[in-house]
Image (tube, rainbow, N blue to C red):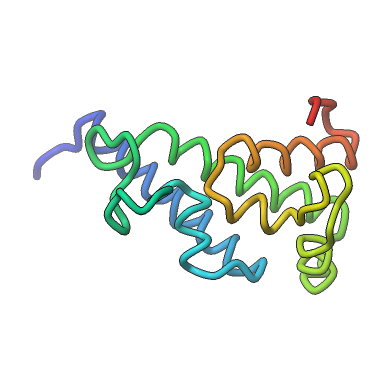
Length: 134
């Protein structure tokens, strides 16, 4: 039996993280196209659909970071609104002054890493888990 090397194992873990992040986004009512942008699979029209940006190997480190942030956003939402997916979805679609009048869903779906982090930071402030500037 052939052993998995470190690179293959890392790629496998990145793929699993991306799968989990996609499931989280689907649960939160974010469609497949926007979910793909959220995890960084394509960010502009020049890139082919489903091809990672800045790809070196199977997935880029950016995709791994995005997946981790999405999973953490879900965890923080569960802290604020436990067992209430409908209210979580409502919060995600509400226009928020801390996000310049945009919704968290718009920020997450934008494909912009800074905006994804802004949602994470806002939830961190709300929960008291940490205090990053937004």
